[in-house]
Length: 319
Image 1 (cartoon, one colour):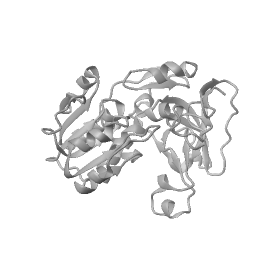
Image 2 (image 1 turned 135 degrees about the vertical axis):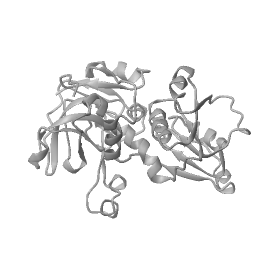
Image 3 (image 1 turned 180 degrees about the horizontal axis):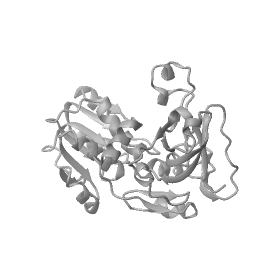
Image 4 (image 1 turned 45 degrees about the vertical axis):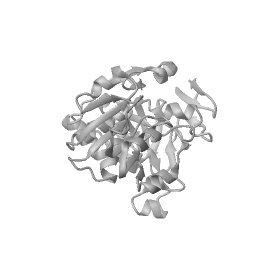
């Protein structure tokens, strides 16, 4: 089987990977498309130093085997956190925080940058008939953006800043824009910021006059350790910062500043899949197309500066 394998230090294209066998309640999925996420790039830099296995966690595919026969032949996307099923987190609807969880492509579980993968059947979501498979590839990152309004109140009259001009920031802007909030997007790349003009104001992140820019809500999605520092300068006292970036390394911040100014910091990662699929199906979120590569050209995919890069792994299908 072909795939991209991480050996703890390097990503390697291989064509001799063993075919996965579903265990217990798992389903076997043939992967048609896989999406490259910033987190995948960070894994290469040491974000998950103990991981050994097939990379990737954003996918669409077709179920070939399942303990529940109704799934066979279905086009699916899937969540990335598989919990133990019996701990306090799993029993209270917080499986993604299970202390024994496996995370596909990152922790204890092979991912989707291969021709086949296995996944717990309850983590699968059927793709609506009207939605194409390439479009559905953006379900997981869109779900991550939808996690924000599920965690913090989003009122239309709240002035909100987004730090970052990449794919995740674009998805977050797409979601918050639907709430009618006044958005200002801070980024480093003028050509990327131009794509955000439909959502609100755009500003260069460098040289920002923080004395004149302050917001009740700041979403940090830059993928950089410097993002939190800028967020702390933009947020109002008693305001809220939502952190979406994951990266290898640490941020050096003055925690007393957040205490004295009573600033709330909220970590935010994976989100709800079904609402994301509904938004994509109804066309309420319009996203630029994905730039696809073959698995053997993974280095080009990882280096791509396109809105979104990914892999066409199975035969091309429009639907």
